[in-house]
Length: 73
Image (cartoon, rainbow, N blue to C red; front, side, top):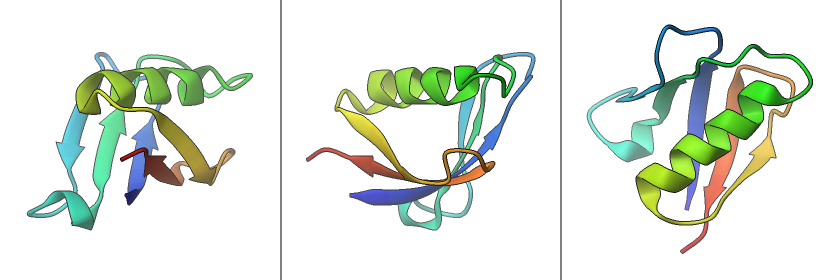
């Protein structure tokens, strides 16, 4: 399953929120890590893998706040 994610780095706490009314509208994920040397991306993957209990990959948007992720089924 592919989902659009908007990442907000340097947040006070890690948090996952729905963008719309369901998962297919996308997610907003706040991460504590700064967007330096891929730290925010690594934390994003760690948070989402823990939340979904499945393997997660960034498909598009490695250096952008808007990303497309793949959740292994």
